[in-house]
Image 1 (cartoon, rainbow, N blue to C red):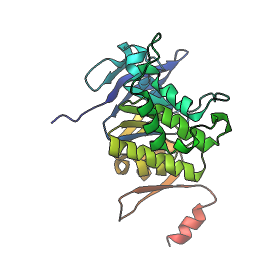
Image 2: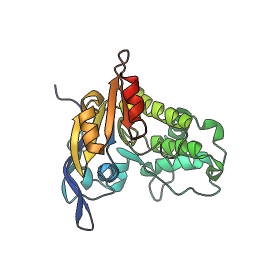
Image 3: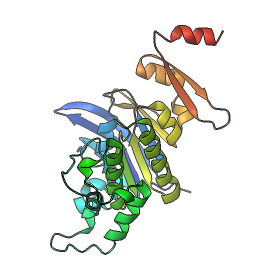
Image 4: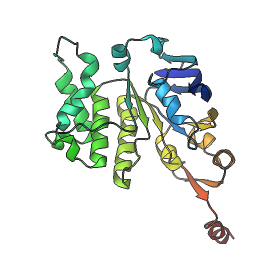
Length: 274
């Protein structure tokens, strides 16, 4: 039986101003699965994600939807009904209420001369409920905290009602509580709603906790891809990041945990293991 696919990038070559930054990039997003892209700064993670979102035109390769449709050939409206993106940063509109910002996600369903969107109110209400922002529906978004605002932007993506959700470093600048809440919500979207999710993360432990599949990039190439246990190994990570990284596995849950070893904690590690 062929495994169902929602979005795939294959043999992608991506460049900036003639300089190749991703070579032979490949990634497959499947319904109900979270795929994490990890790697050092400048390894091509965000560029590869942006190519899937059609924000970076590839020099070569293909981006296809699960039914084989060429994603690059779709109209902007049709693509936006299939794939949504939570970018690293967005301009915060002044004086606009949360409900109206979440409603921006309904843009693919509104025609230029027809403002009607029969399913819009239901989709917006559902998105706000899922992200826990219903109680702040009337508040201006420029009065929210960073964590609250990030949840509003995620609600905007959910209101778009797509089968594929792309997130570029969604936990950046969030405190610990909001990081945990956002990642738990991402996991729920995959498990309970069958959304195919691709997410760029810097924190390897977050990737191990949330992802079904991990893609490790290094110097613009896919170094490894597979389950967290297959990819997040001491040998691969230490070589990729250029420092010693210890990896352990929780015997009860099977979750991988990583620990970078710098100059100042090497001696502590040595004492603890003697």
